[in-house]
Image (cartoon, rainbow, N blue to C red; front, side):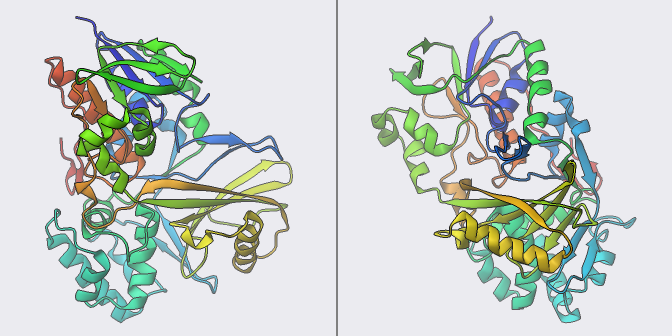
Length: 452
């Protein structure tokens, strides 16, 4: 029997749920308050230039099997460019490449690691010991990761230049704030589990194009109705079930099943207050902590970087991406600063000044034409110790309401992979309630390939 399924939010979680449910004989409608899809993985038009730019650079890794599957099924995987080598730069301008070679995992990165100029031999020995201990540690253990590092004799330089550099980018949080569980997942799954786990994929087009018309056309062909610019004002609950969605236009939309794929604070604002108070499933979300990301967009009169990207050590910026010549005589560079609480209280002009001065020292020669700062204050939840106690499963206590989002219980931190996994898990739950058990979530990589 055909069922009506309403999905709130066209970020990656909502798009993944819609894709997973499409073509199965049901009426799937996707509602998005904005006039674009992608959520936080989106683009906007820069008023000064008219160029479409990403709010923040997003990359994925080879270990992100569900995101890769989503892009492949959506027919957009050709818009991702794999980069097998990472480039680490110290303030003196020296660069060390870091990438896998022909050895099997976990030895595939040994050569790059041993050649890294920014770590002493003693640091490398400590880190190697730490990685071995991390691999042998229970995946469920979640004490403060910094305490774990100090217990395992990691030096401050090893913490700053290795552990912290990776974690701030991967988890959008400082090592002093993260728990062991997701720190372990980053290193074991991303760098030790498979030769391709650490290969990064960078979009070759703006995110608005990656998660834009081609993807929406594909969903439409599979019967999904996408209603952009139509926001939900409230979720009406009667008798322990969602009775309707009250739209901002005043329309009331009814369905058999509902999936909320919006940020957790937005979900709390949609639900009746008494429902939030009644169920810890919802009220616990108030305790989730958030972490900001700042992206500094810079345009120069000439190329300032020879490399496609650089990971900065001991610097204000963390990642620098060269986006090439985007207009005649304009070369675009984006600097990403994760967990950017240090910028709190600073004006955009001051943030631009500090980052531009650092860029001038590291990449001299170009003249800065203009700049722009974008900060996503609630970019991700913080992977603090024990955070999974607050992350809900996709099946909510409301009988016909499922919840998706990278902040739900996915087994992953706040990433695009986690968002897609949540959408797939929510779709699995809906289908199971209708009597059809289907496994949609893809297994993770292991040393022999994808574990199906």
